[in-house]
Image (cartoon, rainbow, N blue to C red; front, side, top):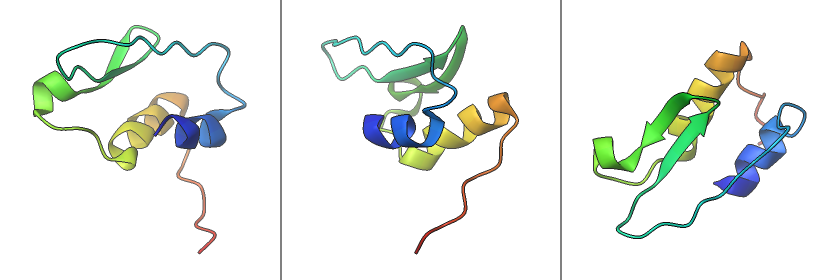
Length: 67
């Protein structure tokens, strides 16, 4: 997940902080905006569940598939 976000948004990232936690917490924020919360969904995020809201905040579309 982290590498995918770094690859896709490398030109938009000024700072990235990973905060280890206990109890299965996984939250992604962009600035002060909560993008994804495992606490709210009860499960780990799929990549697009994190990437798409970030794209929307940044006003970008999904990258074209290279498949």
